[in-house]
Image 1 (tube, helix red, strand yellow):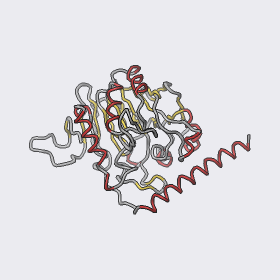
Image 2 (cartoon, one colour):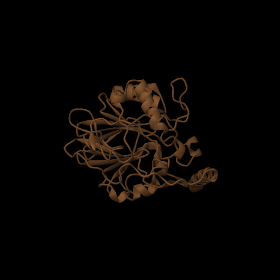
Image 3 (tube, rainbow, N blue to C red):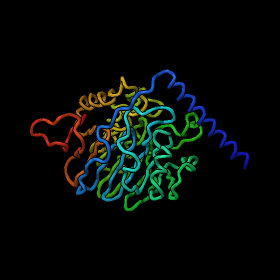
Image 4 (cartoon, helix red, strand yellow):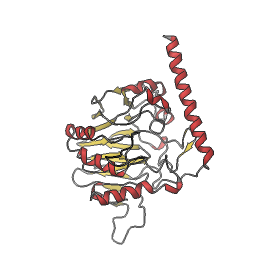
Length: 335
């Protein structure tokens, strides 16, 4: 048994070394870029009369509020993943976050689970992750650790959280996806709202139809839109990503009322192409006649779900408001 433990530890060390080598090779071919500042720095204003709101901190990191309960999804507030720099800074530092009640990890990849960020949250939060993520749970210092099987639910301070299927790659360091298959999405239910957090996923029509059937009336979905090396049903990304077109397919398959695009403008692109995913999302939504259901936040902005009516965006405007506009709060300011 001791030999097996040593072999597993050595395998993880080798995987980490390999990932570091890949990062060094990438850095050798391009200059380090100075990151762009977030659109909104720090905590944006909130409408505390609303039952739910969420801040897109950047990449796949989303701070959700259900009533007075705070959930942090796929936390990574770091400036780097190994030696790969962010292209857009996270909108907050750990010390600027409110007390976090629950952390949800869609998978254990370094860009979705930054161990120093999670440690900085202190002992308070429950940390949820897919069952096979237990292999990497020694990097989580919080004692309330809750690995979940597919369709398994748990409750944190009145918020019900259910692990739902996804299609992605597991592991943490690169090639360990060959034997580790830890990835999931989540349905979160609290304060009268039902939220879908896809984390990172590829396209699978049966998965998303089943999520929609089991959880009808999803109020808001956080869906990734980059990177994708295939963005049609005929040619999806085999490594487990969707682009804007298939993200809209997920929106429709789950029956969600609205979506917020995530997983872009931080990693896996370049300064030259920093705005490409947003432009492609705009074009895809316009072509599908779904722009009224897509709320493309700027990094650091907040989306608010009132008891009734459409979502609202709160934050620093991307441009000066037109005469008679609502200032820093508008009912729909997509793209």
